[in-house]
Image (cartoon, rainbow, N blue to C red; front, side, top):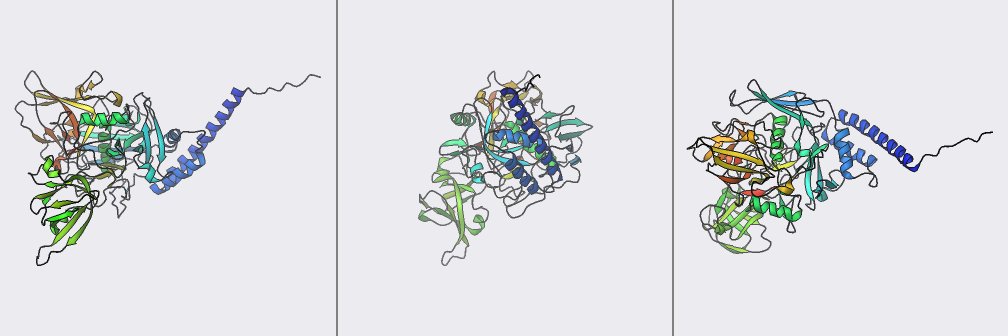
Length: 562
């Protein structure tokens, strides 16, 4: 009788079978949770589903956290919706107001505050749901995720030990002009004419299911540059110094990317149907206060102002104090006592036999007291520290008012316009003159942060389609932006037309035109705390070279790209 032969699978075959079973199980779980997310009616429900899915699926020995997030954003957050918006180009209408289209029609969004949650019909949807993480870019171009919102404590996520990023699904978008209108559409799946965000691609060309942006501007923790909450802004610095500071953290870093700016403006378009952010989530562009002490004191950590003056200041905002010498915050005398110090409290202050109402404005000067002199000691507002909006009850808004212009904005969990220009590291701009004697303003980009420099090297690409031609004889000054360009480089936001009639039309922001025969310029965007209607997401400021340092220019942090 023949003996039965039993085939015993080889070890490698067994592993393949186990791997196949594992993949099939994970795929089934992802599909199940995709269906649950589709039925969710609030962002809080999606948050809870993420926690449930993570606890059910995550095994440290089998998955990295980045691999898990790739599954969540790639497989679970998925739908067939198309979100869109249309605007009149400036030549058609000067209006800054557009219309939501496709599956966005009927959706409503209002900014939140610390006290009240606004309505955000987008926040629960796969293309807009976002998540905070603590992460680090690695020298080989990859990245590692350390702490995750809803899974780990927010103290760890936002600590600045590693960079605090906000993740969002890496969708496909298409932007085009037709019949005097601008159109932008976004979807989960590829289609003719659509492309994924550059924000989700690393310097090696690896494309992820999520894109990642820095939640805050840059700050320093124990002397090391980072991105976290509760950190003073890194202003009084330059493009060159910024690159040096980031390189000290790692050769893979150079600072803020221009794609962050474009992302924020596009989110403003897609959620609010507004060509500019002013009047919806304005950011800090009208918090420019400077007052001299009303009363002299010795050995204090406060300045006495009139009550009316103090009422303009926020506890938790930042100030500088010095002996007045004009009003330029860059003048050393005006910050000879301190700068970038937080207001800790504001209290009524009574003076016997004086009918004037006063307030004491206390600052945290680390216990170092100082003397104040009435009419001479000057207190000035400074750009905000990071984390001003940490307790806002939504993904968009500002702590007290999104439209006051007195505080930073929050959009898709990202804090922006803190009262200082953001210095973008991966763009350099250049002034020149052409054969007609007209001024040319050019944009050069280097999206590999390890190769960013302080001069336009061979690693930079000139964006030929973006050169602005400024007529000879044009005087320096603010020129309001009509539209933004559809650039061949999808990471660049650039003005298209700078003849708008004012701050309430077009893109609700301006380009500071400072014509020069030649010269490389650092990329300063957003505006500062005193720029008013000139400031905004589309704002560009062209005077400053790469070594220019000022109180109103501050460093940003990198995201995933580059």
